[in-house]
Image (tube, rainbow, N blue to C red; front, side):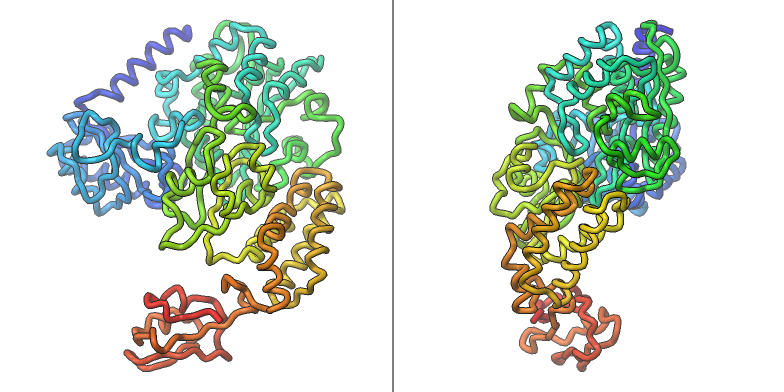
Length: 618
């Protein structure tokens, strides 16, 4: 069957999916939605539709991440009048009300309603695109997430899927690479190296066997961009991988995805099978003479496998450890053959660029950082979620407009970008544009796109210790600067947070960090000290308070704090008594309480439980 015939079939199926007067239920069921209970909500809808004899008159689908993770479970409903409304925080108990109101009576169930999808139904709710969370965003990588059924290739094709591949195979390999160069796309896996130039290196190496690899080994704490794209729109990534293979002259591709992402692996497996069924994978793709196969390799979850030479070692069945460069993978990579590696987001952008053109994509972003970037917005922020914004968007726009600012009226203290390898950016840089150049200027990196918001109640020394705990544990141990450097940094930070720090420790941290940066074999060791060096640069007074005063200003480090109860604020409600795990709080009900400091383990549970701010840190 020709691709034109496949497109015609797909568009017809999509027209039925979008049928104006037919009931429809879309349940956000990526991993974030499932963790919040989407599968229970889905079953409740099916049961309620059967009860009301509506199951055969209603399309019930699971879709990918809609982005608004703070509002899970998310459900979009369309009644017979065509009105589409997004509902937030849906539980199984809410389903009967939603079915009766929206699907039977065509009335919005206002208690859970968040937005209408289009403004043609005006007056009652804002349009989704006008929500503060959505308005500054431009969804290119996330263009289909939450909109299509990710298990249905026809949905992807109907929305322009595989048009990029169809165009690519009519061009020469060099023309495809030139298109990617002109788009300004830079690798979204961390370093930001120009994608087109990277492809050209592998293209220009003469060899009968070459490989392309999709790096889906997303290991940063707080990052979930790649997982969400694979779960919500796997074909966008696979199409980009095939285009990359065509461009460099490879006939085999691998998707390296960690086994902790079972839903993503399931989506990829199903999508690859569908590609074979439609002639989009295998021999003579689209009659072009180009043949290509994709294999899935499940990783065991080692953070170092995010580094390309370690990843290739893992695919080969060896212990995942980085290799010296040169030779670079473009010359000698997987099984000693020329290899190109791109991450999930890069490849999802490639398929869009080849469909719509380099000039269109280059119209977003800044002069040196073109296009858009996805971020996993997490931490101390009101609206957590998966977002995509043009590069150059300010931190203020992301944190305050999209994220809704810091909860409970607390002050912003810092933003951690780039995961455990990134840096902590203080609130004084909140107007900074988010792009590769400006993040580097303040000592951080783009990384894969994790963005953790930190408020005034967080200790920056403890934050650095937390990230070093992770990188020390994940270091493969091959090179001494990383193996020993992470151990020494962690020991010094632990001593400081436990009251054993000395003034000379600060210079030791700087020297070890610089040695790791200059001497480590791979990016893990070269960037592992970033959280330490940036917090030391911008929050040195906080380190000094721990060392000289033996106090933690944020009240976080247990060995440097004590808790007490303000008798004037205490109402004797007993909430702190119930929260204390060691029964260290005493006092009669409705009378002031006190803490037995000999028994107190300084866990902070009493402070969190008190609604009257009577528990103080001293």
